[in-house]
Amino acid sequence: MFVRRALPFFSVANFNASTRLMRHAKIQRLSEDERNTYLSSLFAAPYNWKLDPNHPSKDAIRRVFYFRDFDSAFSFMDAIAKKAKEMKHHPEWLNVYNKVDITLTTHDAGGLSKKDVDLACFISDCAHRFGAKES
Image 1 (cartoon, rainbow, N blue to C red):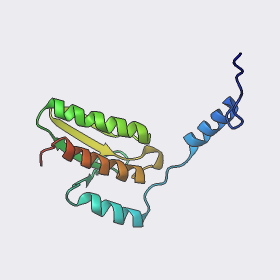
Image 2 (image 1 turned 90 degrees about the vertical axis):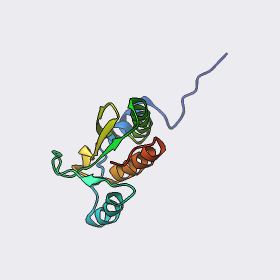
Image 3 (image 1 turned 135 degrees about the vertical axis):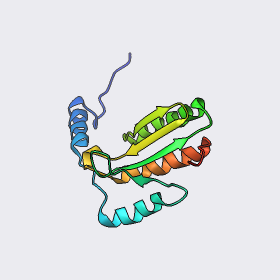
Image 4 (image 1 turned 120 degrees about the vertical axis):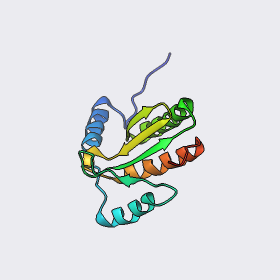
């Protein structure tokens, strides 16, 4: 006979409480020192991201990528979607045929966070892997 035993560290109440805490955990916006360090690297080659002054947050980075065809662009987006899901951090993006326009910001932080920097680096590496053309 199978006897189900409760794990001492897991209960629905504990799970719900920890989930609430995670939802309310404040993601920190980049400090001035972090901005200087991380953004200067992201704005330089080979990353070539730029600040997006038109974004409603007034604190976002953006880059447009071009690929050989739609299939390449879509494969690129699929790889990013998997990583974004893993990171629990999602880009704002637009795809038209071989063009993928990506904007990153952290809404919960009210601007750029380390998550944006990490995802931008991953996206840039993916772009290279999937054959993005220089724009």
